[in-house]
Amino acid sequence: MLDGTKKNCLHAISYPSSPVNEQTSLPVIPQPEENRTFFDKLRDAVIRQSHSIPLEVADFLVQWSWFLFGIDPKKVGYGKGPITWYRKRTMPPKRQIRIHLLGAGDTIPRFAELTAWAINRGSSLCSATVRGDLSEADVIWIYDQDPIHPDLLDKLKRKISPFVRCGAAVINEPGTYNAYHKASAFPRLERAGVSVPRFRFTQQDIGKCLVVYKSIGKQGKRKWLDYFDGERPGCKAFEYIHCLNNDGLFRRYRAHYLAGMVRGSEVMLSDSWHVCNRRAVGIEYDFVPTDYEKEQITRIAKVLSLDYFAVDYLRPPKTGGAVFTDINVFPTVQSPRSRVHARGDWGLWHTFDARARLGIKEPDGGPVWLEFDRAMEALVENAHSQSNVKQRKAR
Image 1 (cartoon, rainbow, N blue to C red):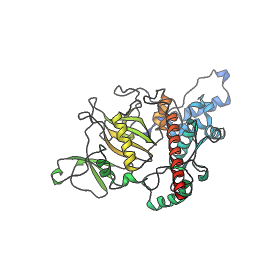
Image 2: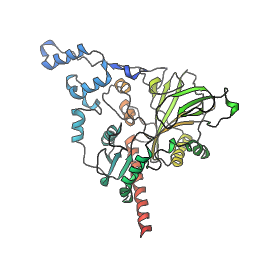
Image 3: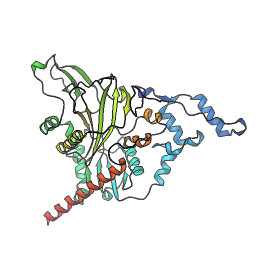
Image 4: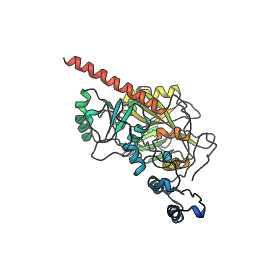
């Protein structure tokens, strides 16, 4: 199990840099010999044979046999097993706002079922489904890995059009879903006053300006730090932002935007310039975006016509302010298993629940699911208003 913090980070959890090799041990619960049952012996045999096993295997075992290991079911998150199935069967009836998570293809998108489970568990106003009837949806949430192929976006648009005309709200409409991946995205953001890295270079920059080369039209791919040597096929260059702090760590800030709600999510710490989960040495959950950062994030949403996204940004120690480097309409919302196990939980958990599970009070605003409900309520009301206006004009 993992514990403690690194570099004296407030509310930080340290965890291995290679999630593939993460392992954990199931708890051993001593029992007097005379009280040992068949299940006690079976449990101990499993522990002896698998004293150190991959986290996903441990989560599977706990989902099916939590009672053997003395684990509180409340600490077990989403998974394929009886605890999750029971919760689905006993879920409250459909609530006031019904959300449908809609993928672009025939398969269920990654994170969709976890997101629906988290909404159903945390929200008091909304219910969510992945394979539901669109005619019953108050909110249609386009939910799939970006960028989506244009043909699939056209298909999605035709599929949801009848329900949009009847007043259903849409999160990230097909027409703007890939906005971040267009060549015009950063020029538009720059013209609107959003603080973004420099992306225009001249011959004078060759061999002198340190840049990050990023793959075009892909999410989560490799990045290269190098001196500018001209355009590279399939890549876009951005000026490198120096953000090494006095403690020897780099920090990447992430916030979520949802229908007007701006919420600080996490600060990832790394001893590498490329701050990401694979290279992270710790994480902080208690940061609050400044008013300037909130205004910038809201401006990003307006420029790109997006209703939901995660945005990554840096706070350069020397110059101050914030520089926004990446936008993702389909961010990873599953808390890494290492963090989940480090705080004493099991299974899959949505990142929105991280603070509550750690016992950290929301530093800005009320409980996250209350803020979520308010955002959904405003989104639905706005969609109904627009639908009524269109109907009056059509008469």
